[in-house]
Length: 496
Image (cartoon, rainbow, N blue to C red; front, side, top):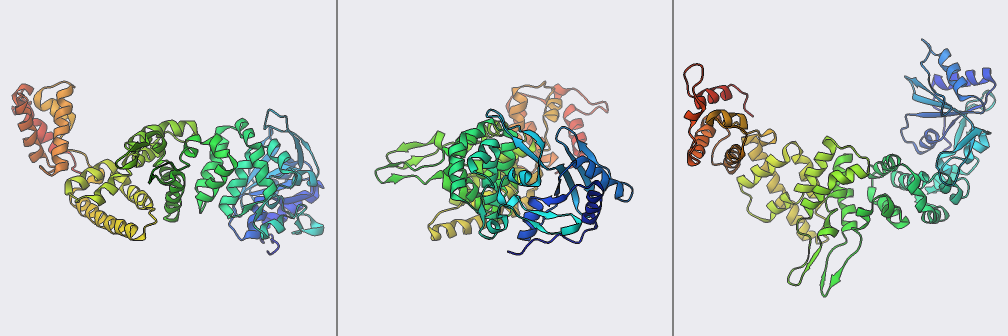
């Protein structure tokens, strides 16, 4: 492992000059130094000075062309300075912290560099590079962080019980770093997480979810989730997922372990480049299986309806985890609800009607759905898996064929509820909904095209069967019947 070197950026010399003028030793500390050693990209820089961090930031800002704009956070004793060459730089004075047993908010006071390094979460984040004239660029490594980087080990600078009791979120961060970097957690540190896991209850859900999302976004997220499960943290922060674990057996009938299956699907989605929300769909696609598990003597274990129940659970799970309640949640809910549909198409004759319905319900998320469903094929029977994937290819070809012909990703029936009401002189009612549904079903079944002439003719026939007449809508201002006037107006609308 090579010693990290400060990049040749003028901003570092500027900081060194400002620090010298204030007679405050300064150091680049933490993740930026770690990532330099690992050869990873890192944007934000943390600068620790033995003295007033805000004063140093203002001194640096004054030396920049046009005077850099410094944002001060007095409550935290920190300041932020954006730079073109190195992104955002945060300045803080070296400090030491003490905690009360019932709170994760520390009492902070000025400290030495050694005290500041000691309060860091892990040795790999307690590395520093000097910004001082006498040893500019020299490595500061009081806790063998370089050794732990070389051995790919997550370890705390001080005793892990102290570190995790003081700041319980560090237990999540240990697992997050292990998952992101593919590092091992040192045994004493790992055991301390188990002992202190209940302390996570005092951490805000928002901060827990930030770490959980970073685990989900790591290259192989299953590693992080296995660590969460093994330490007992998962049972506290996401109990519904922990319930997926385990296998029940009756006679020769046993179901697969849905926890490890879910993790394999998640890894498959990650390997395919799925974003955070597609990964969340993978996490939740079988979340309701424990609640729907039943044993049938003839067929064994079943999970009928788990996709619908799981979809109904999604808004509540997102609310509990403080995840967004908008488009992201609705997309995940949709994918959970539909995740069995493409698999069902593989098992039966693929009809245009079935494809149209899938395209209509999935809409713009059809590609995400198909990626999730491919990831869901985790059978250890290689021949069976290859057969499913081959059939999936046929379904995808059919999807493209029907989509090119019918444009169902943005499907909107040309006959709207407004047209139906104007045509038959109706007010909002059950009859309007039934007629609208009939038109949509006819289009999806391929009985009629999604074009005004055919759809309107079909609507009039359906209305007549219900005893409705277009004459009841009165005449248009040009003397035409309401049905004709409505059709004319609708034809001017853009078609999908």
